[in-house]
Image 1 (spheres, rainbow, N blue to C red):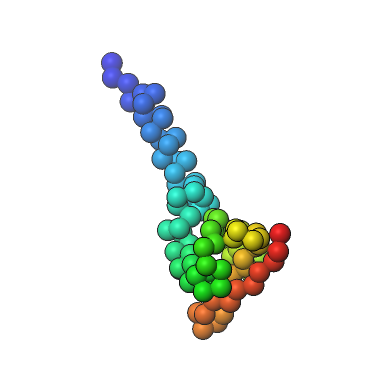
Image 2: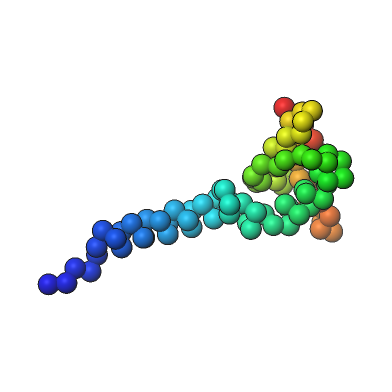
Length: 95
């Protein structure tokens, strides 16, 4: 008698479901592919105004996206908004 559903298959299905969930949420390594254009725009902004800053994961917010940025001097929330013509606007909120 052949078993169709082995524990190995159950583990693989569980791992696959976890990866799909993480991709949908945009967590960890999957954050950059999900929010690619926002990452590029934020990196350009940070290289211009906050050289050497490190950026956390981007999350969606009510009016766009946001991420936490750390510099040697301070940490702040970077708010990202896209205009009708596709341009990105940035605002900072100190933490």
